[in-house]
View 1 (tube, helix red, strand yellow):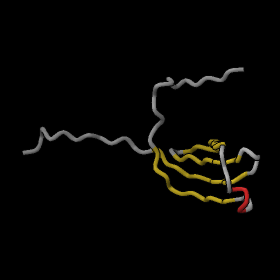
View 2 (tube, one colour):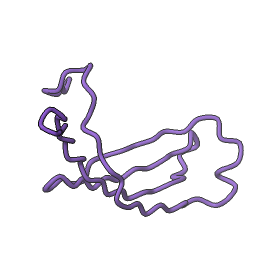
View 3 (cartoon, one colour):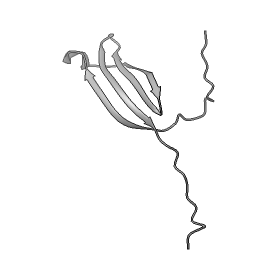
Length: 88
């Protein structure tokens, strides 16, 4: 099964501001030595009123959960350009 989005592939996601992050390094120190590959898994847990709550995990190629992070972002409000035409 192939999932597709309504957003065109060449478009950029909306800009966000990082409001907060809680990051835990969850494995013993040995798990972080000699890393050759890692996988970043990210998912949107909830979205409301322009706020996004995400969970991000980093896994080693040895299946160790290295980092578990909870992220809160807020979508940037569009900047309105003011024309200088009406100013003296």
